[in-house]
Picture 1 (cartoon, one colour):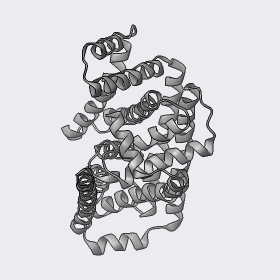
Picture 2 (cartoon, one colour):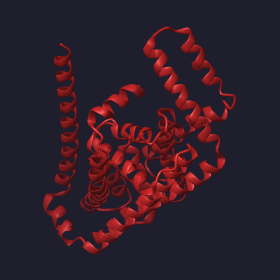
Picture 3 (tube, one colour):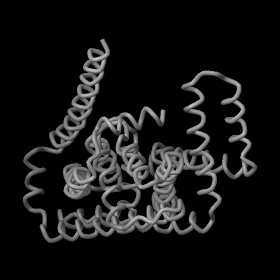
Length: 339
């Protein structure tokens, strides 16, 4: 009976993954269709390989900063991990986020850090903070651009940025207003009050992650340095998009690239379609069109930009994942432990 249930669950998982991937591909094909296949391929053929190569180099530099940022957090957690090892585990997590839905790559990265003797609570707090830092950096870069250059932008653009502010404000405010760790005490009381085994396990893990996240937020030096590094990461990510626009002989304003990359990354962060394929391109192209880029050119820039970033990640991430020896069953098991 258990084997039948496992088989059914495995079938459902694979069905969901296949459907989610097909939806992303369908969105991409729809975008190219509306842009015009002939126009799209004409732009692709005329794209400068030299500028594309430069964009790949620029994007690769962003990974140096990504690894350095993680190195700060693992060092703060008391573990000294080599640069190459951190690169492998980090890019492997990104790769799995591209290939799998529901942000399973983040769960895998937590698993990797656990393998490096960093507890699940600390690992979870680190990965959560990395995501918060990405949003903070994107907001720092995009809010001035939005305020000074695009005051007449549609309401939904401003609303998206406000949602981002709200997302990062909640955890930071909770920590700042809870310096005495009353929330942790509350969780401990709940653990002692209820006898439900699953509730106790979940509460203890949440409490462990909260305590370590509390320490991360209150470490002012670490927070300041990690924000600066995060801004460097996204500056190179934005420059990649800008270089792609030059490659297709339709340079966009750097301010438009800033806003476009910000909105596109927020859009693709929703854990629905693996890698945000189709979602990222739609959002980025939408911003480019909004500020004067022709639709066919905008679609081409968005597809090339996302393709460069995903292909770079996959080229290095798949061998890294293989060398680490992580199995999909391990990721699912860990995610069940976290939930």
